[in-house]
Length: 269
Ligand SMILES: NC(=O)c1ccc[n+]([C@@H]2O[C@H](COP(=O)([O-])OP(=O)(O)OC[C@H]3O[C@@H](n4cnc5c(N)ncnc54)[C@H](O)[C@@H]3O)[C@@H](O)[C@H]2O)c1
Image (cartoon, rainbow, N blue to C red; front, side, top):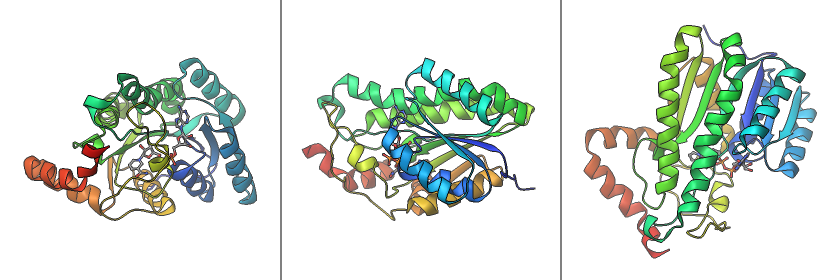
């Protein structure tokens, strides 16, 4: 039987832009009560306005997911104001595009702090509430969460870490009725490219080349919504994600050759 999200509390991190924004709208369409978290206050105002226009029940919270105390405080406010959490979508993230040898270690730490520790802090703060509702925890990983991607050592470490964390957590919480869904996404048309960090940590402020089909955020959000409703464990989001999974697990050397041919530009950055 499909999960029903009507009147259920759905927390989305990184809600002010791109995929997170689209996920808030998709779950709101299904009648969920949305808690949108982001560090971008202006973006949250625009989201709140759009959700209000849709007639959705929603609250937004300015919260930096790398700040454990702020995350604990925000999740407490969500539960007090809106009730127990049914879905937590760990979506906030940033990448860098730069060779490891040229990149400051602090840049890798920033990327890992947001995608991996952000996920750990948010999940830790929400887990008791989610166990009470027998809800769902979702992690938005990437093809770089199961296969190598040149120029993104920090991003790959963060997303592989997220996958290891959530796949293991699933084995602990399944007996409580909690679902865990890992999403391994290919390129989506969002602000991620513009927000990518360069070797010294400054935002790149320009699009990076993509490969394969690029998904639109609303389509990606729809697929994630359906996978959560169907209680799937894993979603390979986009044709490239599925093809990459198949090739990397059958012939990793061939995968690396193709991936490098598509990412040759990172050696010139
Ligand atoms: N766009 C893609 O091609 C793609 C592909 C695979 C996976 N993903 C993943 O999808 C997720 C969403 O990214 P997107 O593509 O929508 O990018 P985006 O840049 O459009 O949105 C990311 C959001 O996260 C927020 N954020 C960043 N750091 C934060 C922090 N410390 N605390 C709270 N919020 C923070 C940003 O303010 C922004 O609103 C990310 O985890 C990303 O790694 C994206």
